Image 1 (cartoon, one colour):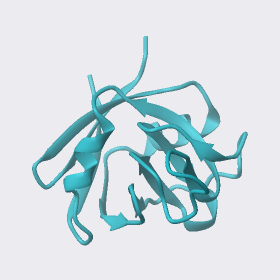
Image 2: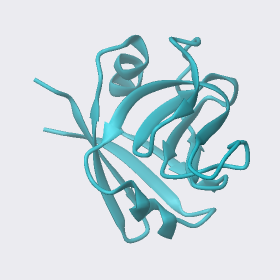
Image 3: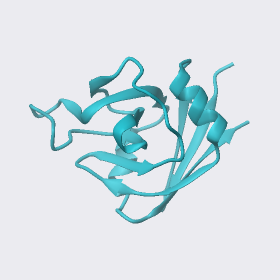
Image 4: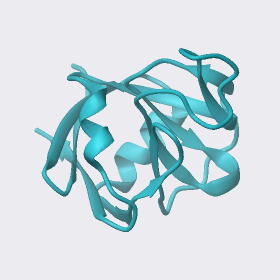
Length: 125
């Protein structure tokens, strides 16, 4: 059975499904997690109390991917191009991230997120 999470910030509520990897396991075990939104282009990220090494790290990701950025111990939600993107549609992280899940709805809802907002992640079910 797939593990599902709920992410809330401001008026935004989104759900995601975790994949099977060590990063997803570590984050699942740490839930619930609360943080403070940071914005970098079309990416929301926030510090989490989880430390995981690089695992199949990728710099280019897809809209809706949720990932962990090891250097910053950050939970990342990608919904469009970032300042590191090299063309109009590419979504590029600052450096390699561990993708551990995917949003199940429209990732563009995160365009309404604002820096400094509280954000929470919890388990569904």
